[in-house]
Structure formats: structure tokens, C-alpha cells
Image (tube, rainbow, N blue to C red; front, side, top):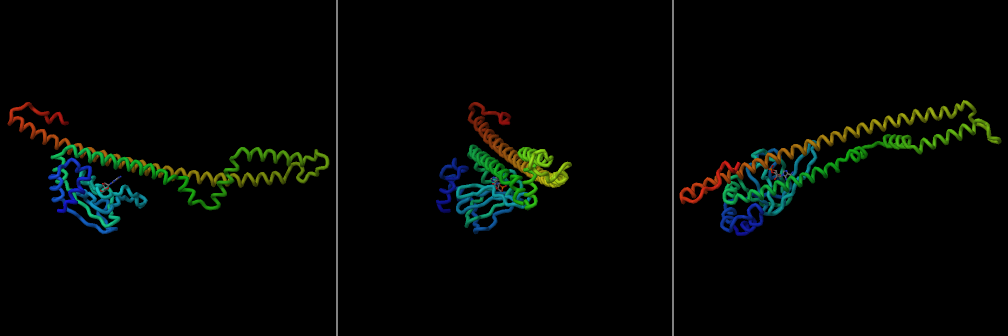
Length: 299
Ligand code: CMP
């Protein structure tokens, strides 16, 4: 096994606690897999029993949302890990992985990880740090997608000219300046047509038939525009509710999945600490020194 593999693994935070011999042994026993640019490494939903360390190349991790849209959740570069969820909780792959360049990966299986935690339980904190990083990137992704699916933007891109006109007229009708302007217009019209101003000839004398007809037509059209605009507002509310529902479901599922993973990791750590403690107790009994912490104190 070339020394470069061991050097490469030394830069991975999870293996940072290993000494030279341990890292060389790990590099020798680890299987390597090669992928061409564009080749799938695994699909979301596949069974997964290993995680991967990127030796060279680049990997894209993505999911398909309910609308079939491809969402990139992370990118893994040399030294990065991925595929740890399934290794820890033995559930199907939560995302698909694809090599975006020619890529070489180290395969880390459950036995490798158990061996690592048995020798260096503190390495489990690196796993926890990585899971925290994943939660953070998911939080960022969720908040970005809220902006990306702004219901107003989503609706405005699909507006017809008629709907835009209806919105414009409804906006004008709902403006107080329109009310004041109409009041001034009616007042001028009525005073003009009452025939009380010398030299001004009425063109629509009392009972102002022309004005009545114009105002009735205006009222009919305005109410139609307002109704069209209200329908659009109702549609927009529906889109907003759907988007909020999707986001809540996604966030809830992600949080639940991450809770499960942290529980599994905690269980693993406690199990290893128990084993270590039993070994220490055995040694102390043999050598007759003071007793270690009881296993029951570990939870
Ligand atoms: P696993 O579920 O085994 O396979 C897909 C991998 O993609 C997963 O492990 C994680 O390593 C990674 N992954 C899944 N979801 C996210 C996420 N939300 N943010 C970052 N990485 C993720």
C-alpha cells in the first residue's frame, strides 16, 4: 500500500487520533473503489453498510424532493467523508452519491469503525461534529429553499396579461387617491350639469343619465377585477400553505432522522466505554488496584 494513502488518511479528522502504525494498518486493510466522472456511487434508498473517504476526485450528494427536483445536500472533496448515516443506523441511503470527476474512494465498513472507536473512543466526537455540520448545512439549505420558493415569485412567473391587468385595476380601486379623484370628478360633473354656472352649458342634465351609466359600468368592471384579483390571492395563499407544509414535513423528517443517528452514535459510544471499563476492572482486579467506574454509571 503506497505511503500516500496513509498520509491522506492522516488528514481526515476522524482518523487524526491514530498513531503512525495504526494509520498504516488502516490504510492497508481499507478497500478502495474507483469511479469515473458521472458514475453513480449509490442511489437514495439503496442498502448501505459502508461509508467512504474521498481519496481523490469529487462527489455530489443529492436527494430528489417530492416534486422530483434534484437538491444537492453536500459535496465531498479529498479528505471528506460521506455515507456515514447508513453505516451508523443501518437504514437505506438517505441521498444519492455521484462522482463528478474521476474519483478514488476508501471504503470504511462497520468493523473498521468499531475497531477505531474501541482504540480511540474520542474519535466518536469527530463523528458527532460531522453530524452537527450536516445539520447546519441542512438548516442553511432549508432556509435557502424557503426563499427560493417564495409564493409571490412562484405565482408571478405564471401570470397572464389579463391577470396582471386585473391586479392593476384592483390595486387602483383599492387606493384612497382613486376615491378622492372620483369624488372630485363627480362634484365637477354635477356642478357643471346643474346649469348654475353662467356661460357653461350642461351636457348631462339632472338626473345625470350619462354619469349614472358611466359609474355603473365602472362599478361592474371594478368588482369583476376585484373578484379576479381575490381569486388569485386565494390561489397564492394555497401555494404558500403547500410550500409551508412541505418545508415543515422536510424539517421534521430531517430532525427526526438526525435524532435517531445521534442516539445510535451515543449507544455505540456507551457500548465501547462499557467494554473498556470492563477491561480496566478486570485488569485492576488482577493487579489489586482501586476499582474503576461502575458500568451502571455510564448510563
Ligand atoms: P447515507 O445516508 O449513508 O448516504 C447518503 C449520504 O449523504 C449520507 O449518508 C450523508 O453522508 C450524506 N447526507 C445526507 N443528507 C445530508 C445532508 N442533509 N447534509 C449533508 N450530507 C448529507
